Image (tube, rainbow, N blue to C red):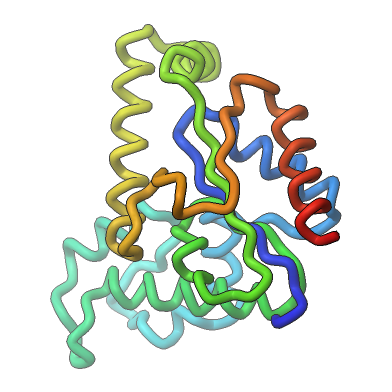
Length: 202
């Protein structure tokens, strides 16, 4: 883990952050882990075996985690179901990081790996107007519905981050590099991030 490059990417909804992360992953030839990949890895590692019983549903996504957290009370360890899932997720992320260089997108990864010696954290943002047009086209929504969706998702990401870090989500000094993806687009933004990584390494 000590010598592995660990990249964390946080992003505003609609800023093309996932596509940028995918391009960066291909350019560096290292794996990208988003919430679905982390959840699958947690199952592969057997993490959920510690917290699941025959009466509990198998968590497959964040929505199910939320539903399960509302359904089940504190267990004997004093932790809620949601807290247990969160701990399993973080342990899974740490195990993945030990396997080699990688990229984590979302999941408050920069907070999880705050002490990692080779962590490089990015925050990708873009103007509301630019993001609105992108979400309108992507989901076939009206301008008002696209903006509502963006605000809802950004609030959700900020709240998730607040539960796991003392630093505010999107607060520039909390990241090594922040960038407006509307200026250079997906490819240009990924290339600039790649240049930053190479310059930093040298």
